[in-house]
Image 1: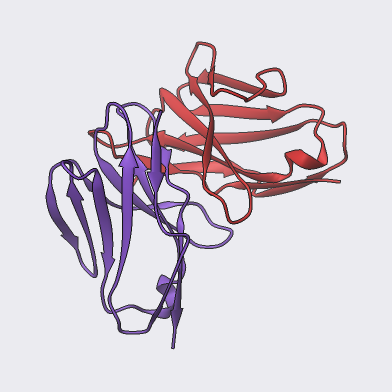
Image 2: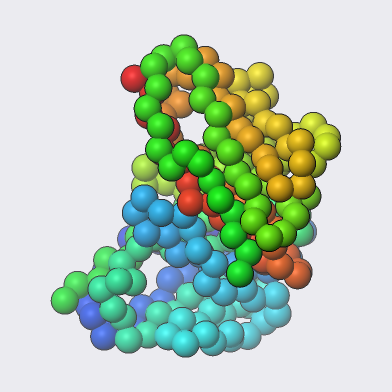
Length: 108
Length: 116
């Protein structure tokens, strides 16, 4: 089977840095994706790691370690609009399986 | 970029009636469309995978006779919730693969279904 574990909630202040971890147990793992979802909206793609290491896209970075079955999403210079749910996902080659999601609350 | 148009965005229906949700791929052909259901504050759960011109593949525990999926063309997939009940109230989202590799998925805007 496939499962991805991530913390249920994280709280941080504006301007800070926050890291959302994701550990996975999957068969046929291809790569780790991250999605952002605001309440009532659809998920939007943030990043993808196929190889070990760090991928940086503006204020967001994502990391993958296949040997540890672990990855994280790093958000820098937090803004109020970053308050949302963040899902890690295993693309599994053909279909995407999502983690339970982490609700990020950004406080002023 | 690639867009998946989903309609309606919200619908309220009476118990026992059926509701159809449409997802259209704009400016690209979606051979495969994925249908998800999401309950409040929970993750997206894959319900089924629809393939153009063939039968959908349902995930374990999803009733294929209740959630009818049709993918008659390369740009349109529909999900029909038949004989809806209050417990079917949820957020339904479709997605299609739009990019190269295994990560290029685009989601529809979702449909909020409320069964009363």
